[in-house]
Amino acid sequence: MERKTKINAEEGRQDLLITREFDLPLELLFRAYVEPEIVEQWMGTKVLKLENKVHGGWRFETSDPQGNVVLRTHGVIHEFVPEQKITRTFQMENTPYPAQLEFLVFEKLTDETSKLTMQMIFKSPADREEILKLPFSGGINMAHNRLEKVVRQLI
Image 1: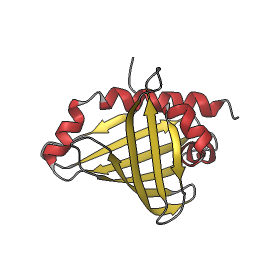
Image 2: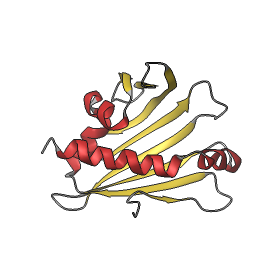
Image 3: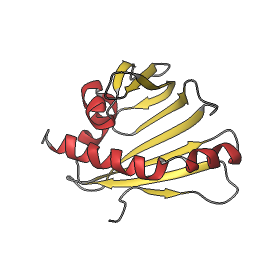
Image 4: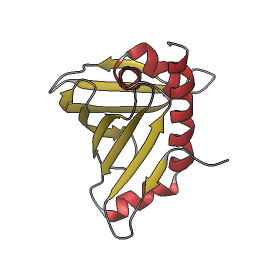
């Protein structure tokens, strides 16, 4: 099955460019990133904090089926323009991975379709390569598939 979420990882660079076209109106795609109840459904994580504003913070916590916390992530929102863009930091706690910078751009394609472009910038090309060794590519594609499924139920 073809992955709808595309990841461009040019050799020797310290960034990734991720793109995905959704069969969702722009407004609904954006809501999937800013409404805690929706984020929790498609990401399978608990939203502890999500302050959608400049200098706002966010914090997510993911647990296994037994309730044990397996991952905590957090960051700061540096730019927030509704239905257009979010610039934020992203850091996984208790891992060797340094913080990264993410630029999320939301784009209307038609009344019923939209596009998300994410540029993720890592501290070094080596740090980026370590992230790519994780099941990152398949994971983000699966998450975006869930996003589309969850949000379609809002239509």
